[in-house]
Length: 311
Ligand code: AMP
Ligand code: MN
Ligand code: MN
Image (cartoon, rainbow, N blue to C red; front, side, top):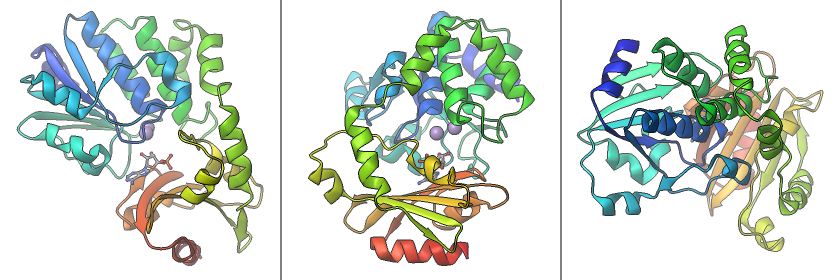
């Protein structure tokens, strides 16, 4: 399997790199690391993404092309590497970049649909950890910039090494990367970099907190709430984890309005409850303890639906 990855990398000079929509530390950190690795081999990776990169990831200087910008330069690239994306809906309109190309799907979601020509899908904390293993096995040099991207990917997807996806292999990779990065800078940028507005927003979101059946904690955010605070760019990362932190909560849910009658649902669990199964039922996906989906309906209907499903 790894030979296939090596052949793809070594037999091509230009690549499209696709992170998933609503990007997070794993998909961006991995993209930056891969782009740099290719650059160090005198190759070129084009990261194509239309979404805003979260503030705490700006320090990675991830250079992205929007789909429109990329189409304008009109390159004839044959290979696409997708990172951290369990199904093609995660690319939205960028999905057309997969047509008539060799698609290498590198991912760690149990719900991955194996949509690639090469599907390098393994259970690991993060795609960052998978790339660390690929680069190490193929004897590719990991420089500071690559290490930074991979470390960010691993650190963010493991909740700073707290979640149960953190294995001894994860710690091994992290320990190798730790010495190559400016550890204080990376952690300050990642975790001590929340905007004032997002803290105020989180107050508003937590006013909606309700606990159902003593186990299911739900918070929500509507566009009206955002408008009332006069906010334009918002970041709600970490809020649903705070709900899961409540001692009695076993399943935490964050429902966020996309537009009228369409909501994004983020699910988190403790112990044995499998939220990936639940998200998959509603055309989403994820991991046993962290999953998500988008669902149509009113806020009240969605709350009722999930409370009943979980019962
Ligand atoms: P989030 O709640 O957005 O932080 O996502 C938690 C996990 O679920 C991540 O691993 C996501 O990749 C996955 N996930 C979230 N939304 C979706 C979706 N609509 N389809 C598939 N997977 C999703
Ligand atoms: Mn992700
Ligand atoms: Mn991930």
